[in-house]
Length: 170
Image 1 (tube, rainbow, N blue to C red):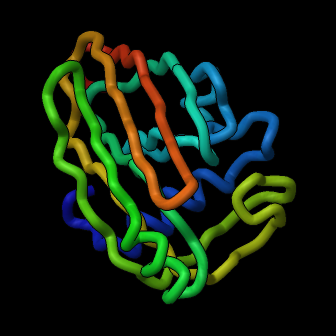
Image 2: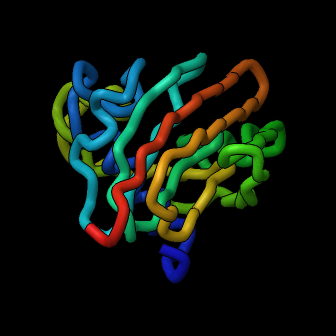
Protein backbone atom coordinates (compact mmCIF):
# COMPACT_ATOMS: atom_id res chain seq x y z
CA UNK A 1 0.00 0.00 0.00
CA UNK A 2 2.95 2.32 0.55
CA UNK A 3 3.56 2.43 -3.20
CA UNK A 4 0.00 3.52 -4.03
CA UNK A 5 -0.79 7.17 -4.61
CA UNK A 6 -3.25 9.07 -2.46
CA UNK A 7 -5.96 8.97 -5.14
CA UNK A 8 -5.73 5.20 -5.47
CA UNK A 9 -5.79 4.66 -1.70
CA UNK A 10 -8.80 6.92 -1.25
CA UNK A 11 -10.69 5.48 -4.25
CA UNK A 12 -10.14 1.95 -2.98
CA UNK A 13 -11.09 2.72 0.63
CA UNK A 14 -14.19 4.74 -0.29
CA UNK A 15 -15.25 1.98 -2.72
CA UNK A 16 -14.82 -0.54 0.09
CA UNK A 17 -16.94 1.67 2.37
CA UNK A 18 -19.60 1.84 -0.37
CA UNK A 19 -19.50 -1.91 -1.14
CA UNK A 20 -22.20 -2.89 1.35
CA UNK A 21 -25.61 -1.60 2.36
CA UNK A 22 -26.07 0.39 5.56
CA UNK A 23 -27.19 -2.64 7.61
CA UNK A 24 -23.85 -4.44 7.17
CA UNK A 25 -21.57 -1.48 6.53
CA UNK A 26 -18.25 -1.34 8.43
CA UNK A 27 -18.49 2.45 8.85
CA UNK A 28 -21.98 2.22 10.40
CA UNK A 29 -20.90 -0.78 12.51
CA UNK A 30 -21.09 -0.15 16.25
CA UNK A 31 -19.20 -3.19 17.57
CA UNK A 32 -16.95 -4.58 14.82
CA UNK A 33 -19.08 -7.49 13.62
CA UNK A 34 -18.79 -6.20 10.03
CA UNK A 35 -15.08 -5.30 10.00
CA UNK A 36 -14.28 -8.18 7.62
CA UNK A 37 -17.03 -7.20 5.15
CA UNK A 38 -15.70 -7.16 1.55
CA UNK A 39 -12.03 -6.80 2.54
CA UNK A 40 -9.56 -6.84 -0.37
CA UNK A 41 -6.85 -9.50 -0.57
CA UNK A 42 -3.90 -7.08 -0.45
CA UNK A 43 -4.81 -4.82 2.49
CA UNK A 44 -7.07 -4.58 5.53
CA UNK A 45 -9.26 -1.52 5.84
CA UNK A 46 -10.54 -0.13 9.10
CA UNK A 47 -13.35 2.38 9.37
CA UNK A 48 -14.06 5.51 11.31
CA UNK A 49 -17.66 6.61 11.75
CA UNK A 50 -19.98 9.02 9.98
CA UNK A 51 -19.55 11.13 13.11
CA UNK A 52 -19.51 10.04 16.73
CA UNK A 53 -17.96 7.24 18.75
CA UNK A 54 -17.64 3.48 18.31
CA UNK A 55 -15.90 0.64 20.12
CA UNK A 56 -15.13 -2.33 17.91
CA UNK A 57 -13.44 -5.72 18.07
CA UNK A 58 -11.80 -6.91 14.87
CA UNK A 59 -9.70 -9.91 13.82
CA UNK A 60 -7.04 -8.83 11.31
CA UNK A 61 -5.04 -11.30 9.20
CA UNK A 62 -1.29 -11.15 9.78
CA UNK A 63 0.85 -10.04 6.88
CA UNK A 64 -1.53 -7.43 5.47
CA UNK A 65 -0.99 -3.69 5.60
CA UNK A 66 -3.72 -1.84 7.50
CA UNK A 67 -5.15 1.38 6.02
CA UNK A 68 -7.74 3.75 7.46
CA UNK A 69 -8.82 7.37 7.64
CA UNK A 70 -8.62 9.33 10.86
CA UNK A 71 -11.09 11.81 9.39
CA UNK A 72 -11.93 11.98 5.68
CA UNK A 73 -14.19 13.78 3.25
CA UNK A 74 -15.60 13.83 -0.26
CA UNK A 75 -16.98 16.74 -2.26
CA UNK A 76 -15.75 19.37 -4.66
CA UNK A 77 -12.08 20.24 -4.60
CA UNK A 78 -12.85 23.50 -2.76
CA UNK A 79 -15.17 21.81 -0.22
CA UNK A 80 -12.56 19.16 0.47
CA UNK A 81 -9.80 21.75 0.92
CA UNK A 82 -11.94 23.77 3.35
CA UNK A 83 -12.73 20.71 5.47
CA UNK A 84 -9.12 19.53 5.39
CA UNK A 85 -7.93 22.95 6.61
CA UNK A 86 -9.84 22.31 9.87
CA UNK A 87 -8.86 18.65 10.23
CA UNK A 88 -6.92 17.38 13.22
CA UNK A 89 -6.22 13.83 14.23
CA UNK A 90 -4.34 11.50 16.50
CA UNK A 91 -3.87 7.74 16.41
CA UNK A 92 -2.40 5.47 19.09
CA UNK A 93 -1.51 1.80 18.72
CA UNK A 94 -1.44 0.70 22.33
CA UNK A 95 0.56 3.64 23.75
CA UNK A 96 2.63 4.46 20.65
CA UNK A 97 1.70 7.45 18.51
CA UNK A 98 1.13 6.50 14.87
CA UNK A 99 2.09 8.86 12.03
CA UNK A 100 -0.91 10.49 10.37
CA UNK A 101 -0.64 11.41 6.67
CA UNK A 102 -2.43 14.43 5.23
CA UNK A 103 -3.97 13.60 1.83
CA UNK A 104 -4.79 16.73 -0.15
CA UNK A 105 -7.93 16.94 -2.36
CA UNK A 106 -7.52 14.36 -5.12
CA UNK A 107 -9.90 13.23 -7.87
CA UNK A 108 -11.32 9.81 -6.95
CA UNK A 109 -13.94 7.32 -8.11
CA UNK A 110 -16.22 5.56 -5.65
CA UNK A 111 -17.84 2.32 -6.83
CA UNK A 112 -20.83 1.45 -4.68
CA UNK A 113 -23.82 -0.83 -4.32
CA UNK A 114 -27.44 0.25 -4.04
CA UNK A 115 -28.31 1.44 -0.53
CA UNK A 116 -24.75 2.04 0.63
CA UNK A 117 -24.40 4.86 3.18
CA UNK A 118 -21.61 6.63 1.25
CA UNK A 119 -23.20 7.44 -2.12
CA UNK A 120 -26.61 5.83 -1.63
CA UNK A 121 -26.65 4.31 -5.09
CA UNK A 122 -25.15 1.61 -7.27
CA UNK A 123 -22.51 2.61 -9.78
CA UNK A 124 -19.51 4.91 -9.94
CA UNK A 125 -19.39 8.43 -8.50
CA UNK A 126 -16.59 10.83 -9.43
CA UNK A 127 -15.66 13.29 -6.70
CA UNK A 128 -12.71 14.59 -4.71
CA UNK A 129 -11.38 12.87 -1.61
CA UNK A 130 -9.14 14.21 1.14
CA UNK A 131 -8.39 13.69 4.80
CA UNK A 132 -6.00 12.48 7.42
CA UNK A 133 -4.99 8.86 6.83
CA UNK A 134 -2.84 6.10 8.27
CA UNK A 135 -0.97 3.38 6.36
CA UNK A 136 0.45 0.76 8.69
CA UNK A 137 2.75 -1.96 7.48
CA UNK A 138 1.67 -5.47 8.39
CA UNK A 139 0.83 -5.49 12.10
CA UNK A 140 2.60 -8.18 14.18
CA UNK A 141 0.58 -11.08 15.57
CA UNK A 142 -1.13 -10.66 18.91
CA UNK A 143 -3.62 -8.24 20.38
CA UNK A 144 -3.62 -4.48 20.66
CA UNK A 145 -5.73 -1.40 21.05
CA UNK A 146 -5.98 1.12 18.23
CA UNK A 147 -7.44 4.52 19.12
CA UNK A 148 -8.51 6.83 16.28
CA UNK A 149 -9.54 10.41 17.06
CA UNK A 150 -10.25 13.01 14.40
CA UNK A 151 -12.08 16.31 14.10
CA UNK A 152 -12.89 18.87 11.45
CA UNK A 153 -15.31 21.66 12.28
CA UNK A 154 -18.41 20.07 13.81
CA UNK A 155 -17.42 16.53 12.70
CA UNK A 156 -15.89 14.39 15.42
CA UNK A 157 -14.78 10.76 15.00
CA UNK A 158 -13.59 8.60 17.90
CA UNK A 159 -13.11 4.87 17.36
CA UNK A 160 -11.39 2.35 19.57
CA UNK A 161 -10.52 -1.00 18.01
CA UNK A 162 -9.55 -4.04 20.04
CA UNK A 163 -7.48 -5.82 17.40
CA UNK A 164 -6.57 -9.47 17.30
CA UNK A 165 -3.94 -10.13 14.66
CA UNK A 166 -3.51 -13.75 13.59
CA UNK A 167 -0.02 -15.08 14.20
CA UNK A 168 2.02 -15.99 11.15
CA UNK A 169 1.09 -15.00 7.62
CA UNK A 170 -2.45 -15.48 6.36
